[in-house]
Length: 466
Image (cartoon, rainbow, N blue to C red; front, side):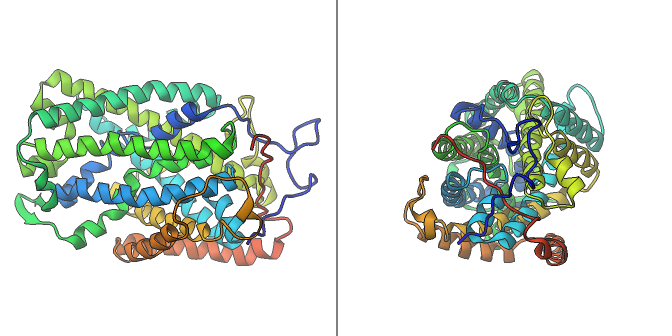
């Protein structure tokens, strides 16, 4: 099923003097795409910023929850790979779902992705101050805002240059992750079997962690490896997208799970006691395993990695707003602004629209941002799984694309599992997300739906290299 339309040239924004629709440039291959995408699941944003919250919530169950989340993400990655090669668009999830399951479904996906793209960069940037502490003490909110503004400036530059910048930073991240893993395993205090028995220290008291608590934390666990979907947003700029999108998605997921999960296991077995593990202070653990100099080096590597994550996320997320403007999701002045490219072929207004509000969101409580993001990610994956059920109907059945194994079993299992998971997540976050989605539904009914010929017209770029 599809009601995706290609707008006439009179509607689409055109390149000056040529009369052809504006489009992004295919300038990166699998290596560059993987560097950019892997940077979005950087150990700074996952291992060093998000995982400590899991340690404080579910203690020794942290590694198990991430492993379960990784298994879920494998099925999700298969769906992304198939849909991303069928619909290689900078619109990402909304273009895929809107093309296959209808424009209203695509709109709901866009709203979930918009929640994620507006919150996640700020959530990661807030963690910068903790890792600058060995050399300077700054307020976490102001440090996060500064990182967001710096990432915004970098996001205005050429994409290929950013691929190499983030690649250099990524080397530092992997070094930091490897050092943590080496030191943790070298100072093992308990066996890996301890990860199968949930325990945590809260307010000085040790308590057990049940399955219900682990399920409640699964939204965060899914978020830990969520960045593999960045390849979808870059699909208009990947060479040979029919082949390279799937390769980039799957390579990124596999590498990110290794880079994140191995140090988590090492930290779990190497923490001197349960209280130190539950505190989640990775810099203090590294200093205790080695010395202050090594702890400072790791902290600075992490701080640089957070900047790296901010750059990649701003790049990724600006492409979503660029595509929404091109697809006429807003009143015409907003569409034109979001679709404007600068001399480096970057959507500069869309980049500012992600980066500047992201700096402001650094002043919102981190726990609230984390819970809302977990709900939005789970809902996003659920809707992508639904769209995957339509991937082999009509002309899509014979279209050239990477195809996931044992279809439709995996999408059905994902839908059931994620629907149940949503019922276990934070109630306040569920209400916030539901309220935003309801408001978006009204916008669809009152503004977009009556203007179906000229608004929310999902465009697909011409793909010369199938």
